[in-house]
Image 1 (cartoon, rainbow, N blue to C red):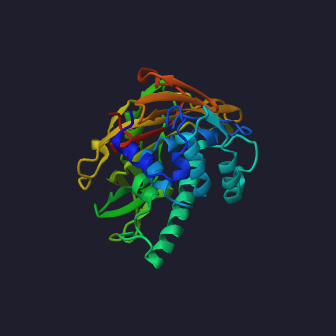
Image 2 (cartoon, rainbow, N blue to C red):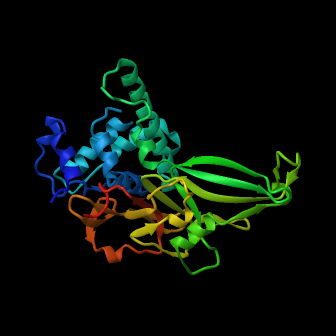
Image 3 (cartoon, one colour):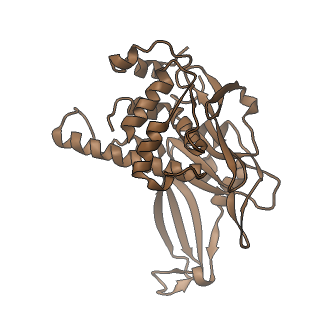
Length: 337
């Protein structure tokens, strides 16, 4: 069974791609480890599970050209696994800091990869906009921006005169604090910590435009524009004194997420999110391993990806104390049917 959205883009692929009819399950394909590259493999798996992004990328010729080639193999190829070496090589040419066999941070890679794809899209959009090659093409129709970009709102209140000032900031990943002294907490606890009202005091006092002086300032944060794809990053890596440590708090997360209490009044009916991918990190700071669990929309099943090894898992087995990145969406192309 293939959902209507997925069937649509499978039918309009180029003939050279359509001729591959021997795939096992579209989008279910392990990725071989090319030298401690598990951090790259899990990010690619989660992006491969982001159906609206796949739909768009399979029609573009952009770093994304090699990424498109990999997506074609993962969605339409006949093998149970493949090598992402071409993507890694192209990525390292753009981001040389990943051109080694050291373990890297999957969240850092995700941000840089999305920024690279964003810039890639803008170059192509600008070219098409100038040539008017695509009817109805908008220069602002960048798929990475539309899917992953949200906006935070900060209301700063002077504790002396109560003057209010507003600032905004765009984001593609929300990095959430994890309670340090807890054995177990929930993802809602982490969200509440992130959006908790804070007071800037001492050297952090903010300049008040009315008082003309630095004053103690209350800061209230909320989401002004909710992204279609919400990526939550659990800040497990930090410092304790002079030592770098990993927080092993078991963060309980859910397949359904309600953001309503953290949204401003400007966000209508966009509070309901559905989990579709998880990146797990086991081990330590300097020696660890990444795996991913992703929902496959055409098959309506969850799969566990450990580099080239792939196995189907039940939804009630998703919870893990190693959760590091959580991918949520309110787009029906990714949600379960």
